[in-house]
Length: 256
Image (cartoon, rainbow, N blue to C red; front, side, top):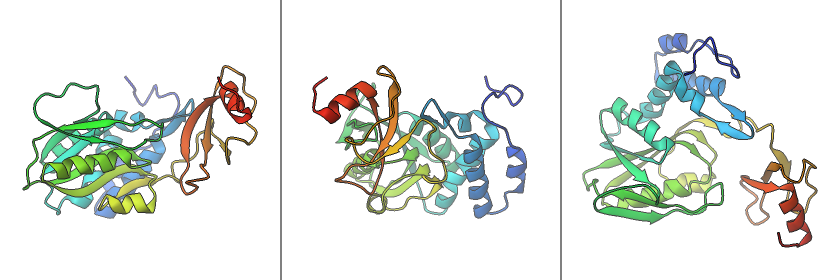
C-alpha cells in the first residue's frame, strides 16, 4: 500500500489544499489537471496512471473534474470499458448519482442478452470485440468515461453499442486526450483534463520517421519502445514495440 512517507518515485503535493481551494468548475478542472501531472509518470516506457488513483485526494479531484461538465446535461447512465473504465466509470456514476453499465472485452464473462461491436485497431495494433448487456433503453442519455483516448477505436465502438440499444450517446469524458480532430468530432462532446503534449514523452521512446530509418543499438534481446509515424497517416503517432533484431530484419526484408 502506498503512503506519502514511502512513495519512492514521485513527489507528493498537497492535493488536500487543492481540494479546499476549489470554488468553481474552472478551479476543479485545473486542480485535477495539476494532480494528474504531479502523479503521472513513465515506468519502463509504460504510462503509469494508476498512481493517480492511489492517492485519495487526487482521485477525488479527477472524478469531480470528469463529471463536472456533465452535471446539468441530464445524464442517466455511465458506461465504462474494461478495465480502467470500470474503475473510473463506477466512481463517476456514484458522483453523478446514476447507474453504471460495463462494457466487456471478448474474453470476460457477461451473462444475459448482449449488444456487440467490433472495435478498430487500438494503439497496440489489437482489435477488440466489445460487449454490453442490453440494459439501456431509449430514455437513457449515456456518458462514456475512460482514462486515455489515443485512437478512439474503442470509444467509437462503445458509441455504437449505446446507440444499438436505442439510447442517446451524449459524449466522452477522459483524463488524457490524444485524439485527432476528426475522431473527436465523431464522439459528440469530449472534455479532457490533460492533452498529449502536457503529459510528456517516455524516457524510453525514440522518435523516428519510418521503419527504414536507423534504430538505436540496444541489444538483440531488448525491446525497443519507439514512436513511429506511418506515411499513410502522418497526423498521429502511435506506440509500437519491436525488438532490435525484428526491426532490423524487417528493414532488410528478412523473415523472422
